[in-house]
Image (cartoon, rainbow, N blue to C red):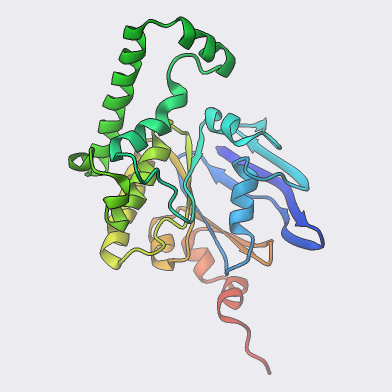
Length: 260
């Protein structure tokens, strides 16, 4: 079943075509990779699917619903969450507070205006009850990642690999149906990357579909069920890891073409 898809999506910036007529599909329950050389349009496509940018042409569908042009916080409420290339933690807040922030919009009524009114009417005890629930759920996520013992540590004091994990934990706090990971292994050493691979599989096994951009081909080929390849903004291949690594267009995009 297609969980998320684009239909002939194009994004231009002036005369530059960043994404050109791309029809991308992420299936429910799978890990989908999005790969391509630098400048291929991968992050632009991510941004257009998650509400951080608007397509020039084309459509974005989530569970069959047209969400083209929706803003990012409404897309998040639908069940789409993401991380970024550069870590964006609240560095002077604790580990557990970072995760609690990721769950904040789920407290009270999910309708923003109604939620504000309810917060004005809520008693002190109700507000504390919701905070307790947020804390308990944050601790569960930290245990999932094996970093619950660091709950009160400032985020900026964590080793790099743990900071990456904390950012993913915060994204999962909103209980998404699909999680977008933008170069999650960037800057990681081989041991950290191996641990990340196991973690992404665990996330998929909980029922959360995963879409990831990644330059580490070992990671991509070992954990992805399906892979889409972009080059110069165009989709040049889509298929299983075996099909992708044997695709002549993909090989040419990464390694170049011999001249006669």
